[in-house]
Image (cartoon, rainbow, N blue to C red; front, side):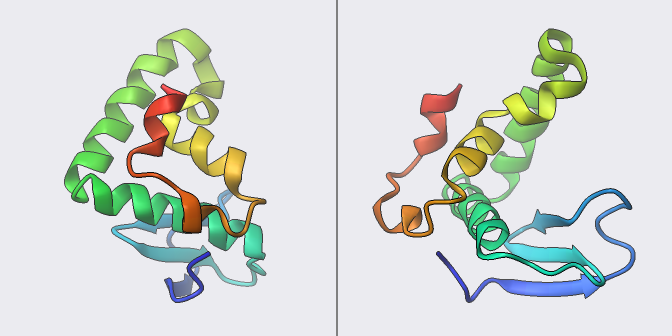
Length: 109
C-alpha cells in the first residue's frame, strides 16, 4: 500500500455523497472523512492504473467504459468498470500492490 499518496482535504472535491476521488494521483477527500487503510489502498490501486496508462488514457478509458456499461448495468455501471472492480476486489489486501502485475485491470473487463 502506498501511504505516501498526496491527500488534500476540502469541502468542494469530491461532490457531496462521495468520500474521495483520485485525480492524477492526488487524493481529494471530503473534510471530516476518516480515511481507512482500505480506502487508501483502493485509491493507491487507482494511482497505479493511472500511471501505467499515462494519466490521460486512464480517464479516457474510464469514461468510455462507464458510458458503455451504463447501457448494460444502468446505475450500477460504476461498480462494473474494470478499474473499479480491480480496486474493490483488492482494497482489503493491503499488500496487493507489492505483487500487482501491470495492466491487472484487464482481467476485469
